[in-house]
Image 1: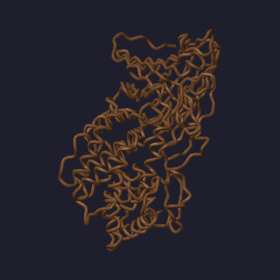
Image 2: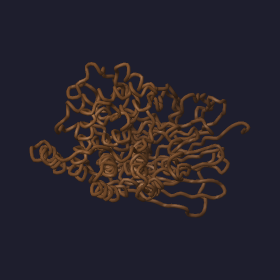
Image 3: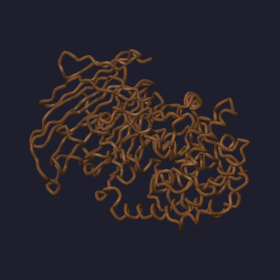
Image 4: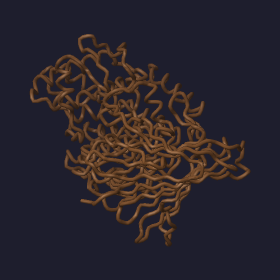
Length: 580
């Protein structure tokens, strides 16, 4: 069996570090946020929110995300449905509704307007929007910690502005005036609340809502300029030089791209060119996002994000100037793409995201996914964030573990610790990577230190994709960590897991160290492993698709034990039969 060769030439070397002192938000930051919330509830802040309200809007921005006809019909039938949770409208009290937080965020951001906007019966849509909007305004005329949270206010501003013909289309002039007054009030609130948000997608949502409000509400030029300055300072911190998102979650990258398209159209709808920061950021963000897609056009589950469907990327391709481009390597983001022939391999060769930027990271360092043409072959088990349904808590937690990824696991222990609230603690602090490419193929050689302090071990993975795409050769190496990192060193069991995609079946070979993999289309791949004392088993697994459907699948598990704090395992995936 071929091992990954060492092609000459040096294409890229990188070392990515995770801030070892990053434990999320400090006590001082939490105290400041609590103090700000009390100030927003004070009479002084209420006085600051007073002012004139507009009689009209200057334009309507274009929402790049279409509504769902099925969900729109459910609203008309009296049910607000989001993320698998239903609330009956006849019993709706926004202040006391018992619903998961993901549903409340959507409802408080007025995401239901997006669905009503596509109804062919415009009068019915306007009536439903007036009813729901009236219920909300009656409940939250004054500050509330959740409903007036800056990121949700930003979302709400964009939803109202983008779907103004529906929410402001009623002949009820009292309601229309109330909505216009609320728009001005929310914008004044963001004048003070947006700058106080920490870096992240939430602050981008606040600044984008503020920019759109300043652009489309008469007399808002100063507000728009302030929001633009906020975005110009924030976006370079959120979007890395190679276009990767700092949270390392593809779902965040997609949400940010859609947010920027929505906001940029506020300028375009009044005949102005959108500020360059929107196009410049999208020019980096979208190709990097598309570079994570496999042959089926979907993006796999990385760092909490659910699988991203191909139609979402198709929308970006139509709306973003660089929508059809893709980036193959992430010097700063840590994701890398190998492709040859019909084969595509995506590997996560970066440390977990900072805790302050991601509440749902995965402990899947050095995991990879692979496709053969439009069929997935190797996958991770999935992600929970962004699904249209809610997963059982135990399943959602399990998807974040190292064992739920196609990578090496030492002593059935996560390479990065996962806290009870889903955030990541200590573990992988540095990932080193070297990339080489020659006429023979492409090689990635990466290592991480996630087990160094706990077990005194370093983990290395080498992947080589042949130039014709017909073979992926891999090598897993466990070595002793430097003494300065050593906490304890003893022999440890390890498993290298290869989660098979939905519909891929595995049949063991007679020697017990291989398997024949058959895709739904009938293509055959031969898996072979070799390593002293290692054994191969075929075990049950699962995969959660973009709809939240749990597919029963299989996984190949190559198990072994370290000897003198070291182990080596070689494996290969080779396409069998004629290629068509």
